[in-house]
Figure 1 (cartoon, rainbow, N blue to C red):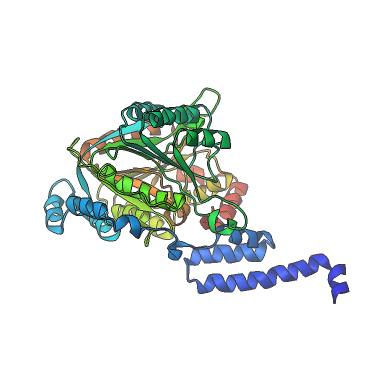
Figure 2 (figure 1 turned 90 degrees about the vertical axis):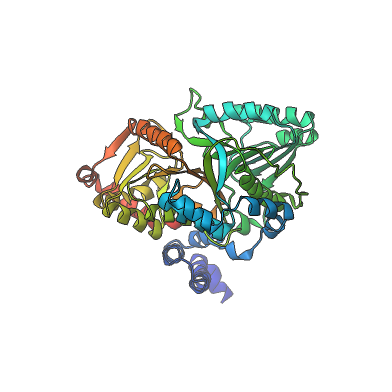
Length: 484
């Protein structure tokens, strides 16, 4: 037997591969996950010997139910409970607002208040920041004003020119006695040990999010912290798509990078703060003493109502996806979406198509040439169906559009880190601001129109005439859409 195996090593390995693959397939089926995801992984196991097992080993395991994050230790804190109770709007007040500024968007508010205990917060100021240039200009000004703490959490934190500038700014504040905490995603970031140690030497606490170190690789490679947030003194917060990397500030030697971030000031920052603390307790294995300095009483800075949605394996439900889904189903006039990756699940795809077919003007702006070959073709595989349902599709040609925004009926605007894809909805840690304000929505509509000036309009008749090989690439990429 041993001699036979030695003489037929490749055939023997194939047999062993499929024995393991069959067991894995049975395990996947018994997990009762999304059928499309289940079929995708089983297909990978069948048609990709060895590689299919690696794909599932690194990317396919589900940890939402593991409760590996210490959520309750933050949400059960008396300080957090006090501000949530103070800011939470009861159903009677929400019904009053339904006839006022909320109109039919009250269902989105109720969803997040009931599921995530995140209140709709009144009296905030919101500033839209287009591209990294505007975002970092505002951020560096705000960092100089910090008195108590600066909290930084980023998917991509590179120590290139803009990253080094931020590191130096944080060090200067640490020298002044400001408490600085930094959480960066281990897989996506490119920050050297030299700079990490430099920050630590000045008292900055810095931790990576879920380091990928063997043998724990399988639990950690798939679930990444895709959030990009900053909190300054519990009063000023930043949320959006701009990472800490030079391409986001559009240097001359790199292609154009179109993105959207927002600066928030007011009590809504408390919601962002609580999500930072959730991840901080996990990455640092600490329990920060939650004081009034972290959740200060602040005056009203404006008249804009905002709500924060966050999701990831630490949440019971895909809150961001559900909020967007509810908003789309409640749309009456128009929906304008900008996203770098459009690989929707069936719920979102059906919601958008039916919205269009019942008379809502649905427009989708996506990059013509993205930064991922597979994601580009997977996205393109949906375009024919969208166009047939009456959805307008625009290909952004000026560069890479990385903004993640949605505008609904001139009232609701979402700006955050979540793409319109399976990975953002189900796997990564994401955060999105939902802003209920007509003036801000009007500004966002104008920005959308300006972006369209740099787009090609995708027309169904012409799109159907694209080369057959392109359609093959799209169909093949779509098979793996849940894995991208």
